[in-house]
Length: 208
Image (tube, rainbow, N blue to C red; front, side, top):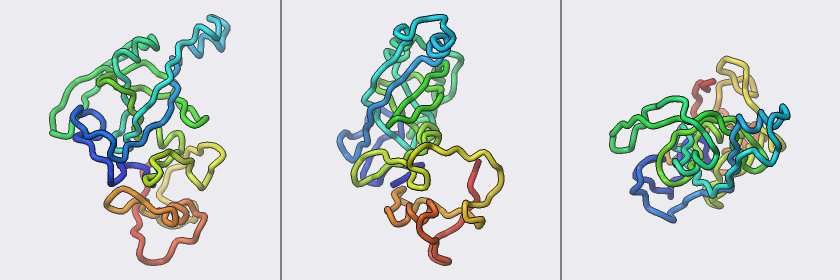
């Protein structure tokens, strides 16, 4: 499993943005429902009918090596998402390009949803780190699927307190080795379900 990197067997020429990636090598895909957040708010207030809310069902590529999520121009158009500005996207080869960033949309995966902005480029929907973290989902590399964080499997939990202490009160456990994947045992230890050994696992300050 991993939270912030691609599975070791997955190869991308760029974590989300480079088109020349190899296909079928450890890709993780998931059904994602995208909803225009402004439409949803208007329907909630009775300004439009629920059936007028614009939605899009996507076979999305999960790329935990990318920070931001991506929607292609035709999906942004289907959802009626206007651009609220631009952001600079950096490709794996070092090139940088200014691309559009959308108004808020709701991304729903595995019954969990979150509000997000997305970069507009490419030809498919890509789910990045920020969505995975807010939905509290991890990538199970071997099965090529998303799974809930075992520490709280029923619903996503967001940390709101500052500081550098873990659930157990000590230093946070480093969650991933160099290849980006962690074993089930390691995940159980990180989640606090199994005790963390006193040696052999590095500690680091968690960023909030």
